Length: 76
Image (cartoon, rainbow, N blue to C red; front, side):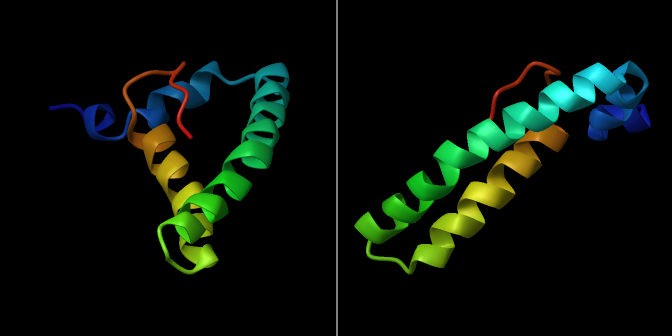
């Protein structure tokens, strides 16, 4: 099996441009504005400390973005 099969984000580096990096950064900030407070709220509703919601809101999209199978995958 190819190395890129396990790490699909390695293929995407050659597709990046200055414009796409800027657009991805803005999309990430926009998503964070929604997901971080939502994660804190869900943790509080579940009776967990709020920081658990922050951890979940930060780690899960990173893992999904790096190991997801699509360049256009929306995770968060």
